[in-house]
Image 1 (cartoon, helix red, strand yellow):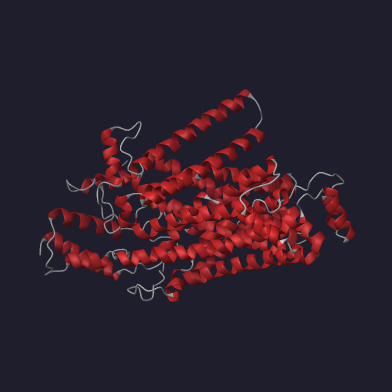
Image 2 (image 1 turned 90 degrees about the vertical axis):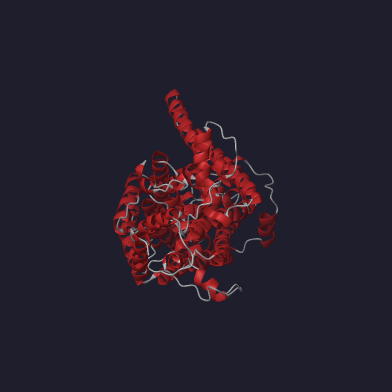
Length: 600
């Protein structure tokens, strides 16, 4: 046995003793066991040694203290037992489609365009499913989540910018969850818990929920399932008592047209896409799938895992779509084309003390989470208001936890910075709390709910920084091997991405044009910011073009293109069984595209 083989054998024994195993043991054991008939070249031995060293030096990761075993992993037949084992990550991911920002977007859609934008909501969920499928495949095949792959494949400065952008999206989402929770507590307490009190309470309850994962991964997933069921029951109850026109609901779902829709309805349609497809959710889903014990050295197991994760994500997003459908339909039936004085009279007729929230004007009601709850109380009684508040509370609490995990994954992936989860929560929640407390103390509740519009714009602006990387890496033959995107899927997803990005760009442009002050200084600053924004998106797009196989890439030398091709498709790198070594330890013929970026 050579010295290299001896060191490898020793490393193998150490790794077998560790509980965390990502499918490397079987491959390594067969290569390093004495007496094996397969001989290894010096370069292969060096690659193996460096890969093992990096694997053994990894720090513990969030959420993966335990991995869910897969029953009958060798069997190729469909099994509901297997599906149950894979059930969890998709439902946690789907919670982002049910956060208070989405709920507010739903009720505004119903009040502005009745049932006519339901097809947009359905389309947004289908687009979301396609993108979530790519995200889950990346995590399943490579054994790394999106932030970790970005850390390895992008140079230092771009990946830091990416990290900042994703953190902005997470903090924006966190603010929406804080707002939703505070309003829910205000409604449930009949105003006895002031808004600023509800905002402060969200700090404490988050730490309380963090204790849940100490009881095991499956129990944590079950708790999230309970919150989703709570939303389904509460919003489903509102749907039943409001009794919307079922023919109108079906027509809105399957006829892609918006008859007699005005400019506000168009903006609301664009806002639905921006609210549903959230950037940090792509990072989250690619990490959550790592919680299942899949042997990535076996092609058939990876293939089955991809299939089961897709089935589970489809079921989860169908459930979230139904809940969103309930909310749209309730307010399409109750608030569409209704004026303030009409709702005021309804409240007075039912002796509801909140009638003063609606003036005597004939202007259409401007709906938000709070006004929506008050309307339900006036129309259907106090029970409807409290049930609505419970649903909003469940939406805010569940989204808070998934946002916490997304932030942890992003920080660990981009920066290799492993904080205790409570520190991470304290940081992001403090940043989200400060402006929210200010608005809650010094402004009206309508100003607090109005912040959701700004935050939806913020989410839309960050979407390219998740969408482009996930398309880039899932199209890479070097990273995904046999599971890379095919030609038709590449074309479909790129067109899809361009449409989504165009819709979001329009949404941002319209909102900025209407909200920002009209002065030359504003125009200059916005122009500079827009140029920097577009330049960085263009930079990421160059990586995507190489990954898609484009041979002539603008602004890129032949040498630079060849280096990227080594990473994204030309060199056949066994990326997910051999982690990338440091460039100082690379053999002469080792592909340079996956070198450790820590030296940048």
